[in-house]
Amino acid sequence: MFIVVGVTGGIAAYKTVHLVRLLVKEGHEVHVVPTDDAVRFVGLPTWEAISRHPVTTSVHDDVARVRHVALGQQADLVIVAPATANTLAKMAAGLADDLLGTTLLATTAPVVAAPAMHTEMWRHPATQANIATLRDRGVVMVGPADGELTGGDSGPGRMSEPEAIVAAALQAVDAAPAVTDAASSPGDLAGLRVVVSAGGTREPIDPVRYLGNRSSGRQGVAVALAAADRGAEVTLVAAHVDDGVLGEPATHRRVTIVRAGTAADLASAVTRAASAADVVVMAAAVADYRVAEVSAHKLSKDRSAEPGLTLELVETDDILAGLVRARRDGQTVVGFAAETPTAAETAAERGRRKAIRKGADLLAVNEVGWEKGFETDENALLLLDREGRTVGEAHGTKRETAEALWDAVRGIHSS
Ligand code: CTP
Image (cartoon, rainbow, N blue to C red; front, side, top):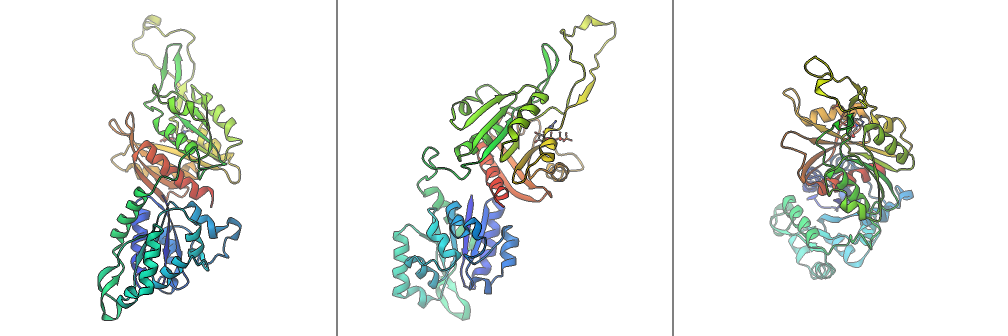
């Protein structure tokens, strides 16, 4: 999810550092919007480091990207923690004199606030009236908790613990009416031209045999469908996929399917489509080797007196490497890495090395094995940037992991 965390000027801001960390760890894209007062308690470098995104308090930064409304428009959830009495009053009045104020007015996402202030301020009729107004508008209040406050006072006014705020916020999102009706909403990828390759290539040995792999095409197709449902125009270059996997994309009005059999077919289809694409995702399991000489006739056991059979294999072109070399300005190239852990290295470590070697903008590392990754609807992806740094992690159905991949692409593509 794309989550905006508004931080206002209270000592509890230090606890919000942990809150942001929890959200990032869960794979969410978090943008922190502190008020000027908040940065007296916790500075911009901390928020930037912890959220891994630039942070500003001002509506006058990044004007070209209309940041003052863009964050609110993109948000799936806004959390204000701590929410001071002053901020709650501004929210109730609809004031927009800083980036947090404009973001809150521009958003249609669920808003969750965690009030923090002294007990007297909390109990003041003005604050209580503001809370009532905000609740009427659907803002979810978490806390305040009862306990020790700064200065030795105690009573209601303490900001709730980060874990409780996160739990309430995620519940608020689940409870919110769906606003992403694909048919009526333009979607956050609207206007993007996307190419996704999926499935496993088959390299012929003779007219009846081939070298193939276990890819079912489910993850790549989930990536294509997620993009199309979010508004992108998608070219799905499909190698061999399991029966039924192309049913849904075949009827999607924003998906065009191009079939490809071999690595060479896939290379030419992807390269052609990539020339006009904003984002290319290589989810296909492409053969690294093909048979040097394909037999025109079915190979027969009685072709020679010698036992056994040796096939000479030659390397196929690395399509992803070609896409990275030909990458245009503003184009985003995404690779997948199917890794089995070895005694010396975990799948993640192998993925990190591959991310640096491949130079794609994003590499989705997928641990596979005899029982893992194939022929199931569950998957786990570790998302790495060009330097091998983790930018996201997702576990769940292939569709859920596909959504997380697009959240990460969106972060990279727009930055
Ligand atoms: N890939 C490609 N062309 C190939 C082989 C792979 O474009 N001939 C792409 C895959 O679609 C995937 C990425 O490269 O996006 C990584 O594929 P993978 O098989 O994990 O890596 P390899 O480059 O084959 O490296 P190795 O076999 O050493 O793990």
